Length: 275
Image 1 (cartoon, rainbow, N blue to C red):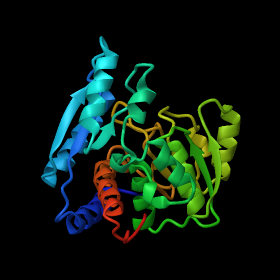
Image 2 (cartoon, rainbow, N blue to C red):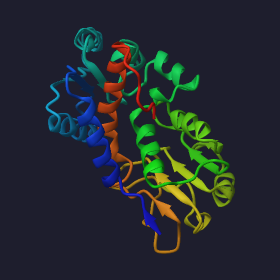
Image 3 (tube, helix red, strand yellow):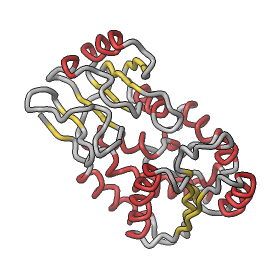
Image 4 (tube, rainbow, N blue to C red):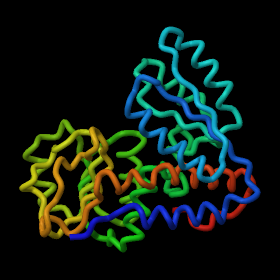
């Protein structure tokens, strides 16, 4: 069984970023609900990556007692900075914050324009987590063409972009989510070559439904573990991404790479490799 560690892919990403970064003036604006622990953990990784490349950033936090004022401040601060909105914000106005981001400064590719470009087939607009998954598949020579993939999760930032990615990589994809019956999920899992877990819910697929020929990509993270819900033993799977140490290792660096790709587009430079 092979562990698809993100460490080797991270080193390749770092080298690529270092080759593309000179001469670019990038700055980031990181925004979140300060009370959300998962956001704080995620942004710690982003800040660490930015600091490693000496990319300046500013951090902002939602004031739930005055959301309108927070939105005005967010809109002003986001101008001219690559903006990372760590969701959920836990307020009904979350979508308005997202709409306030300039698509040209949207490294997580979450704005309507960038989502639309992705679904029209332009893989340059892969969000950070989907790009991380692609890098792991590519760097570990995981075959996708003609394979059956089960994707569990339909979120705007992870699940749906993974659907676009796997379709682009010529896999046949069954899109599922937490409201699909357990018996259906388990049946689809048994028949799949690749299983992508992106629902944020642990253990939706029974351990008995996995088999030794499969590749499992786990995009979840809660309480130090992923959506898989167990640590595979030798012989249970062909390959899997550990949590921590797999997909999450790459996401912060993919955000930076995405900002460089957006900067290249603004400067009418040729993308060397869209994915």
